[in-house]
Image (cartoon, rainbow, N blue to C red; front, side, top):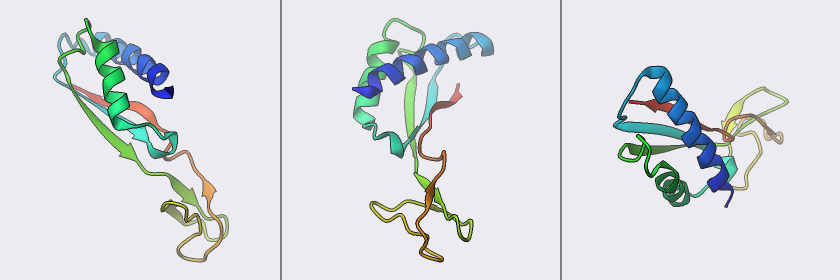
Length: 111
């Protein structure tokens, strides 16, 4: 359900980018979704189709890429991808701390 509101904002931003870049009919839009958000790709796509209906975005191909959740070790400063429930640094086994990686929900490109 969280996807609906976020996708609605993304559609609005995409339309602003179309005006800014003077693109009349985009062919492809690539978005980045952080895994920490817990968004389901199918749900994102369905909401995108719903909110893009009747806009220039309607016929564009939507490419959805996911960004992993990265943690940073406070002891050795190593940045690593979180694996399921494992949050320990693979180098020194200290509990990793969250970074901003994995929380993204943005347009990467629009053509």
